[in-house]
Image (cartoon, rainbow, N blue to C red; front, top):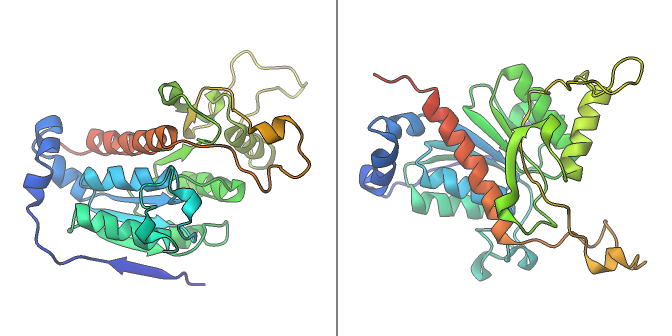
Length: 275
């Protein structure tokens, strides 16, 4: 099995140290060496993932793998960084790769024009990745990434839902067991417990445990009740989950993407050997 994958490079010279001097002043002299040696995959290049990829590029991460099969639509413009009038209809991974190379021409980019599935997860996320950011909204993909990352000991950040949220200051990070007000992460938690042997919240007698074991899955979520579209609240038979998504704002999608990228950058710098 093979995937439609493209490696993209850009030969225009650039003074990388000058472009990213702010990082050196902030994190120290080894920053560019550390981040330049990293290879991070972003899965799902949409409202959250496009901003995560943008932030990684502007943090001088040396290699990025972008995974998505979608194309840019006009409805993406309010929340996705690559969605512009001139990019409508383009592949999301290719539009994002062009933007990244305009930021850092030395970044090594691999694009996978496909959705991640349990069947292709090993091809999308090969061994040796420095980190993975999951920005998908498909449960099968999320479960596959959690299991694959655990098996390969790859650092993984799982993003919850950004739709139906307005308060970017309510963004939280922690173990999956701690996430609240997020139906996507609640379902992921249930699937991992029910089907993959992750610790349950109740004991063998069905009693709630006093201390619920952590699941070892780092997640991001917005600790705010989800705002439903008016048509859902009115039980409009012409609208529903399948055809009318949650409302969304770049204020939240970008904040979540930036936060995910920041967690990765902090982790990379914390584990880089210091002379």
